[in-house]
Image 1 (cartoon, protein in one colour):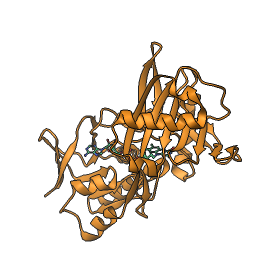
Image 2: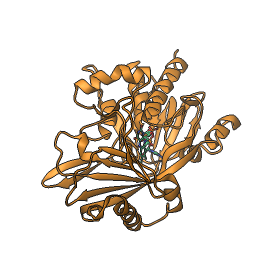
Image 3: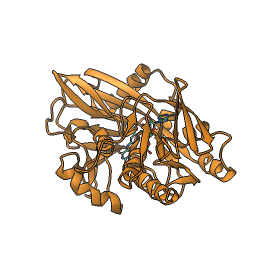
Image 4: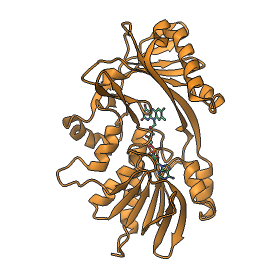
Length: 340
Ligand SMILES: Cc1cc2nc3c(=O)[nH]c(=O)nc-3n(C[C@H](O)[C@H](O)[C@H](O)COP(=O)(O)OP(=O)(O)OC[C@H]3O[C@@H](n4cnc5c(N)ncnc54)[C@H](O)[C@@H]3O)c2cc1C
């Protein structure tokens, strides 16, 4: 033991947390650094204070699928603990001619207390023998340096943290910026090849909600691609919350808009589709996801340069299932790499 953790993980997204959880279970010491105030990254939940209650609202990932073996094996435990529930089997599509029902397919799972619950489950653990993983929040990493016995990262405040191995869990362009000048050409090229689509998301708390036959709606429209009645994921259906996602094309063209102006334009488009009630809100807000969904991914579940590992939904992805699989695969790799 050198006094530094075996593995330093930068980014408490689902991939980083899944990697850290399995490394800890394999007996390795880990330390996680996260720039924001909470865990789960893009599986994000905004907590609104409404009617004297805290209402969780998912404005990033809306639901997840569980087709791969490791996630399907874990799911019954998460469902049994009340962290996850099946939300839908398909979503109708809003086409120019009207709403078209879709046949039921594989389950889509949601978290009644918000998608960030999934991140918290990985951070705190779900088995009696799990301990919460060592985590520093509001710890923005601004530099990464190879050291003789591992890697050292520099935080915004100038302090440093080290690990015998380093996992970077963040969108590929951000990982590339941090590791500039320290990568083998093939690793650098793999990171450079990854592409993303942005997404403007809006949360609306309408004063009145008409009866709607859907919980989530896929939309064919130049401005909007998705609408969800977020409250239908929870046991308490009040107050009603509508989440809207703008299309990749519109989001890209309006990426630098002021959030209030983006919100105004999204509401205007939604009013045309759904009616005036969309514009009559108790509260409304917009959030820009610059790196929302990878459109060109790396073919393998992780990318490694010896004791430096990149993971995330851009590895073998996209989406939550891929992010978790990427974290688990990174842990498998490092367990082998760190074997004495
Ligand atoms: C609008 C939207 C809708 C989506 N809908 C779905 C859906 O319905 N179903 C689905 O399966 N997936 C969906 N996704 C995708 C899903 O959210 C992601 O695939 C998944 O959450 C990615 O996890 P990750 O761990 O790879 O990355 P992230 O969640 O991006 O985690 C990276 C973490 O690293 C932190 N970080 C970054 N840089 C630094 C730094 N320098 N220092 C410290 N910390 C840092 C970030 O704050 C973040 O917490 C959606 C995403 C968005 C944005």
